Length: 337
Ligand SMILES: *[C@@H]1O[C@H](CO)[C@@H](O)[C@H](O)[C@H]1NC(C)=O
Image (cartoon, rainbow, N blue to C red; front, side, top):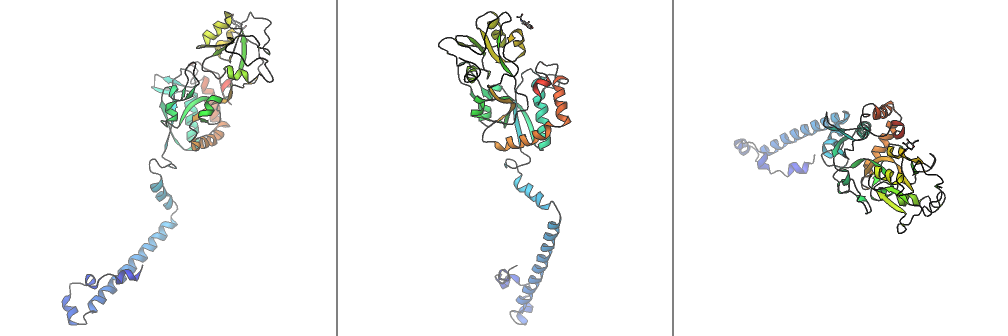
């Protein structure tokens, strides 16, 4: 406490109403006495404040409380109260579906989000939205990022295959599913088809899948001769449903299909071995996020690493069949890490 502050106070303001006393004695006595009283009061208050400060220092958590009040307000980037939002669709499969009884989205993806957010101690909320707002794919055009995720309507989109195309627009968490297999399929009646040489062959593809003509071309150097197909020679045909693709192979409209091992492909004969590498995708399903949101990817990956070796993760996997098995979809052994 500076004494300058005290001496700056005009004497009149320190005086009591006892004008008579002042006038009788030394004109400045009353003023001095008043100043002395104020100094004593100020010293007492200062010592009290010091004691209070020491007591609060000794109490652990005091600064944390102040820190939280100051920095953890809504919107502050480090806030523990931030709500992390995940866009989720309704695909009618065991990974994501609308449960009519509860009116909520359920499935493997939801179970993973709940478990990871619990470990990371984060507030997470699902936001139902059209999947095209996560990833925009129009037949005949190059697919691109959806306005919802790019525009920051949410922090992440659930369960997207980690592909080359999507990685140009978005970042991904570590995959939380196995990478599915791709292969070359022909009709059961087809003989003498050499899958290592596709020169002059017509191949059917599924529209919107990463098992496209660009992926097939990645096998050209070592595994498949002539796998860089020519569109102008009519070697490339796209179908909008798996049923159409399978029918086209059976009817002989295309010589073979290049596709993921979807259940519908069981109608056909798989030529490539189970060890045939998948060069169409970089990983299984992950959480897809904007590239300017690395904080999300970091905390998610740290927490997921902790989850994956637990009994809880094995229960989530079992629930793919038990809790969510009334919906179509892949089996735990095909999905879980
Ligand atoms: C082709 O063979 C598989 C396995 O033998 C069979 O499950 C499938 O039904 C057959 N497809 C057709 C079209 O007959």
